Length: 489
Image (cartoon, one colour):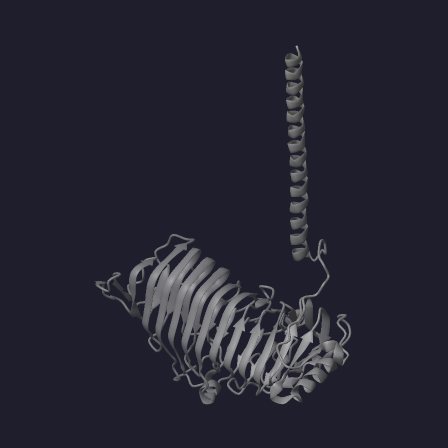
């Protein structure tokens, strides 16, 4: 009897324990679901904060600014006020003057979080300009605050108008060892009023740039955002040893002539790890304009471009020219994605330019929704004046395209040489570009001499000789001078 009652009691305890364990696990499960929902909601609000600036679940503790020079100053030390209203031009000028007095030791100017309105100002040698997170250097809109400068000597013209041109918001001449970097702070040119006046033909001088360095060496610009330049965004002119990395460059896709980065008569330039979406060429390599560029005779050379995402609805992702009269050589463009753009890689020149474009190597390019992938144009119709020499003919030669991929491309290749300016030694390797229209004439050529090696799709034009992967001739070039260019498509 005792054993039977004890057995019943043990069974009741086990049943109670099972219910307790089940209830406990159910409770833990409910807690887990609740925590998961709260965690997911926190992530959602955090992402929303990034996109929309809503400060949920965010600590307002600024990241400490590293000291990159022996001496460091804050803009507030010189009376700067980051409220978006106070004009900080004198604060910038006084800070730069203080650093200039330090000589080769150099100094660092920290721009803290805030909106720092300013007119254009100059930098000095051995200087680091550091933009903290949420720091914005804001260019004043009224052009009366922007100084006028002489035309560039290799242009002989203000580019848009004869005579003087507006300077840049941040400027440097004859400098050495200058760094602009930060925690993705922003330099904003407030170009909207300039674009409006340009469209309405109210400008009497060429618009101002955002950043320009002239005759400088050892320049680094990294980890910042540049946006809304009145004209070209970043213009190194006749500089050496320039490194540009980790930039975000933005302008509305219809903002006129807002080129992203324009190395001009520069040597030893690296442009890498950038995102650029602007209203003209994302990158344009230049070296002077017609007779002025020929006389100035400073080439652009040794330029390495890699790891970029580029978008240009109006122009091209990477251009060489059209101002290339001093010559452009030894350029590598590698690992670039071009999306929703009018053109991918473009070389443009014309009679009167003189100079040369040679030793250009493109590799690992991806085109996603691009109107024309590869472009060479030798009759680009722009000249500074009527004094150019039409017999000054540029040379375009030794151009290699390797590892091209894409989808939704209307015309993969349009290479337009001429009897005066033939395209020599052009080579295609490993190309497979999906087209948006199934037509025969989508690999367009004229006056081009070169070859296609291995797998190249779409089928190359008959101007090019075909070779297999082992270098064996499959089909000789039959019509090198024939034109299949169709600008209506």
